[in-house]
Image (spheres, rainbow over the protein chains, first blue to last red):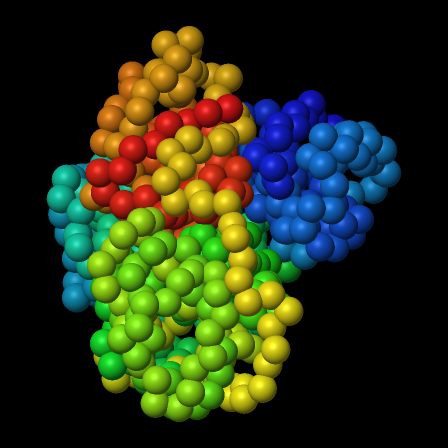
Length: 243
Length: 278
C-alpha cells in the first residue's frame, strides 16, 4: 500500500490529530483505518476517531506527552510492513420506505430536480455510499458518493423535530437521523432499522469505512421490519467488502 | 434513597463520563466541572469516578431516607442542611429524615453533591451520566428517588479542604487548536485581546459567546472535536464545545481549553466575562 505524507498536530493536552492529504478519497480513508488498527494494537487504551482525512488519538489517562506520541506515530506509520492489514468492512443494505407519509419533502425535491418520484428513488437506491465519518449525533453517518443530480440545498426553515430514522438529502450529503432531533435536511423516506442501540456492546453496527446501500420497501414491509428490529430478530443484510 | 422533593432548575446525575464510544458519535458527558467532582469524591474517600449530582443555577430540595455522609462542591448555592447553612468541601453526616435545600446562587453556576460511596444509578454504555436520548431522562425530576448506600460510621481523614477558588477566574488557558495557524494576524489578535461575554446560549453541549471576531472562509473536512474545543463559525462567532458536545465538526478548531479551564468555564453563566490566554 502507498504511504501518504501524514502530519501530526497536538490537539490540547491529551489528544493528537493526524492528518492525511485534504481529499475525500476512499484510498486515503482505507489507509487511515489500517493505521488506526495498528495504533490500537500498539496502545489498547487510547480512543481514536477517524473521519475523512484525519485520525484523532485521545489519551484518556496521561500515558504520554503528545510530543512523544507524535514521534512514535510517525515511526509506526513509516515502519509500515508490506501487505495491507485485513480490515473487516461491510456493505450494509438498509431498507427505506419512501412512502409520502415519511418522505415529507420527496415530491418537492423530485420536482426541483426535474425527476419523477420513482426516478429519484431509483437513483438514491442505485448507489453505494461510503461512511466517511460517524459523529454529530450518536450513530449519525457522514455518507459520501451522492450522485450529482441528487444534490439539493438544505431547507430554508429547519424543522424543530425530525423523526428518528428519517432519510434526508442536503447538498452533497445523504444520511439517516439516528434519533429524533431538529434538522434542516430534506426528508425523502424513513429507515425502520435503529442505527443506535444502547443495549448492545457495540451500540452502532456500522463502522467508518463501511458502505451503505438503500433498498426501497413498501409501507407494510416497513411496519413488519420495524417490529422485527424492535424485538431484535431483524438483522440488516451485510456483505463482506474485499479490498 | 434520596427523595427529590423539588428538582431545581436542571439537576443531573454525572460521573466521569462515557469513554470508548466517540468513534460512534457518542459525546463524553460527565461532570462539566471535573475539578469539583474530584475534590468532593476525594473528601468522601470515594473513587474519583463516582457519580455525583450536578446542580445548575437553582438547587433542588432533597430528603435523605438513610444515613450517610455528604460533601458539596463547585458553585456556592447557599445550601442548608435542616435549615442550617453548610459549606462546600466539608464532609457532613446526614441522618434519615434530613433535608438538604439550596438558596441563592452566590458564586459560580454548577454545584455538586457527593454522597459516601457515590450515587447509584443505571449505567448506559458504561456510564451513569445523564444524556438524552442515550439515557431515558435528561435530568432528575420531582418525586424521583435516587439510590445510595447507607453509611452509618465513617471517620474522614480530612473533613475540610481549603481549595484554590477558581469560581471568579476569568482567564481561560488554551492551547492553539489544529486550525489556529490558518487564521490571519487580525483574527489571532482579536482572539486573545477581546473580553468575551457568555451568551444566553450556554448549556452542557456548548457555550456561545456574544462578541464576534472577523469572519473567515477557511474550509476543512469534518474531523474530531473534544470538550473544550473552541470552534470559529464562518461569521466569526467562537463556540466552546463542552461535555455533551458533538464528537465531530466542520468548523476550524482554533483553540483547545486546558482541563482546568473547562472547569472554570463550567462555572460561568450568561453575562459573565472571559478571556482566552495561551
